[in-house]
Length: 426
Image 1: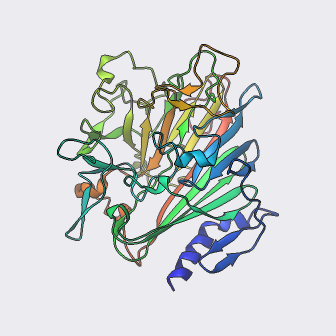
Image 2 (image 1 turned 90 degrees about the vertical axis):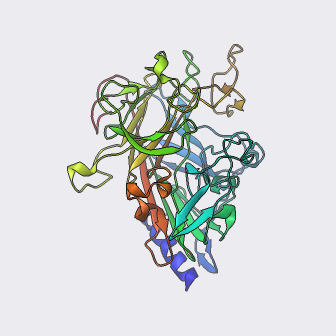
């Protein structure tokens, strides 16, 4: 019975694949086969899919995107996401986690590595901000030391334009209650990348909140003018508020206003990520002694009444004037985390498909502020803020509707500043 429920949910999520002419699904779920031919991974352990004007590679480790290729305004192909050349290296380099993967079963941070469900307190494994009193960490980040983006998922379907991964997370893993069965389907269309994540709590009530943790550089790290991504412009038209946090980025419970023209105002008009980096007030904006952004912005669309998230307009737009590559992010989620890569220190090597070549005065690495992370998700650590009223979006049990996250990244080429001020331009 349980396996049939999981299979039904998987087939529902992959239904869009069946609508692609000439494509067939491949793989198995439980003991049930999904017919088709499996192209398998390439020599680097990567699964290739493609659409119109777009191509991408994915790997089972973390169900991660490892390459995303788009031509810039000069017709030069750029690989615009961080990662490694070979899939095997993701499990070796533990210093650079979360590159393109799915953090889970609960993305972002959990205060004191604990939460309460129906009067029972659960303690999950800590893995961030160690102290003498808490040598393993004061909080839990992205699901713990062995979160979902550290694990190998199973490929259950693969076509020329789509791929589906599945993961079963057992009861008690990292301290979380209950088994969770999850899958994600990635698909490429006409200059677009869509994904759908679904997770089912099969045995106990448990927190579930997922995201996609991609490190973006729309120049493919090849901008001869700067090694940084601070020249990228960002616009989040619904992000007039953000979650207040303490100096280790744990939510305080406060919802803060992003007043117009303030450091965190990206809603009133597009603004370069680095526009305020000379302002001393930006120090501490992303935690203790940190300059930049590691901020959960709220996506306030409900005031306009019922809406279709695919038609409402992007929750975010990121653009590079140098490459002319622009990405509009559409999602059904109500929050959007922005991280300006302040934690990068130049030790992460670029892939062979990225960067400047035959240049000796710039290391082939990702420098501090050399990338941007954009995470579609729900309000962070809401499981410890019951006054926010997010429990039905973050706590799931047997018999409940599944957790669902959907997003569409729509790419375009924009060689001028025209069209930066509203949806549908570019």
